Length: 442
Ligand code: GDP
Image (cartoon, rainbow, N blue to C red; front, side, top):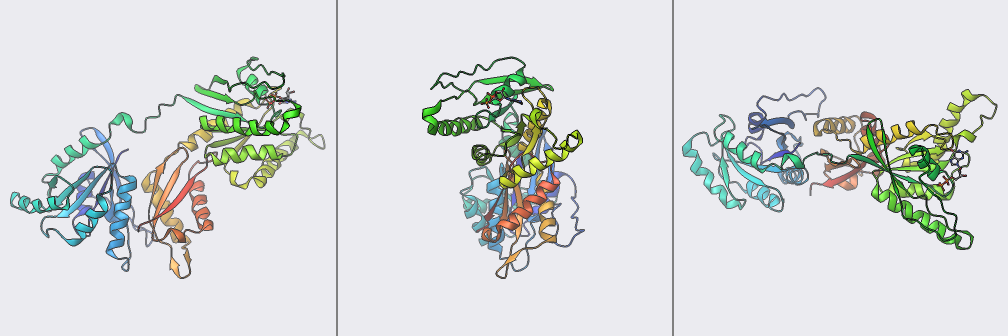
């Protein structure tokens, strides 16, 4: 949904306007001290367009936070999150130096900023609104948040400025793009053959032969997949050195084109350096990652008891994740390209990872989660307390979050991991990397 953010110095009537726009009184829920976030966001609709309204007045500051800090946080939220900014001022008080400060912060914001002059309860007050032309942000809109005067006209303007519905959250990708990557001989070509059920890959053994990547399309459970292949690189003996180079280069190109990297490894061998290099590529690209642990048909249970295979699978995954701890989020499937086994489950894992890769958390849920996490385990360093004012998901593919805080330096690596774990515990994000960065409000 597009986002309309209300900013303004204290007491101009942000929450009154917010309640008016969302058409109800939104309760301030405060079951845990320090957590008052529910009046921050609400969805609403005007002329058939749905959008989200954010009241930056709902961001909680403590007494000792200077107003300048609040103004910067508001402006940053507007900058990151808003499609449209409502810069709220007060016709009764008139222009105030804090308005000017906020206007200065908002001028670089490359999005529509509407100067809304509140408390224009009657036509006489409208003339007081005129002085706000001098903030240099264009047209001013006198309204009365309390009585509703002028609000409908304002909403008409807002809705006209919203990005066209066709540009919002339209997932026009009709297929899931999967890069099938891995070092030579792990079974990539065999796997693609098995997926499509026919011998479409013709592997040439002529020295020096290279082929361009060939995509294979397939449909599974009503979903279209495009398998992007890197298998066709066979270079012989003498030029060993370049095999490694081509392997990495091709894998990189395939991964770049994909949403999800399926990293094929040979389940009978331990992880080699080549496997690890490919895994690192997948991780660094920030794509969803699924391991296909192939040639599983050759795996014998050590004591001949098939029921022990479950444990062997778990152990294998554990070993992989120990070797590449940063890929802890990857999911795995055990396959046999030769016997066409485990291929459906592998695609199921790809779909799951794909959903995680595209996952969007509502701002409300996200902020509640972060506030609760901070509340139950506050963080401070060198006598300074980390304050997180506001969190927002700035993008998907992969899910990326920004925290507005008093000092990003205070977001220590271990604390960042703590927050990421909280997010992962609460939402189905297995298979995708998740990014979390801190921004200063300064
Ligand atoms: P690529 O270089 O990764 O494309 O690997 P290929 O698909 O060319 O396979 C390399 C070798 O492993 C071939 O001899 C395949 O027949 C064999 N192979 C591939 N997948 C499996 C599997 O699941 N089980 C067994 N037993 N052999 C496999």
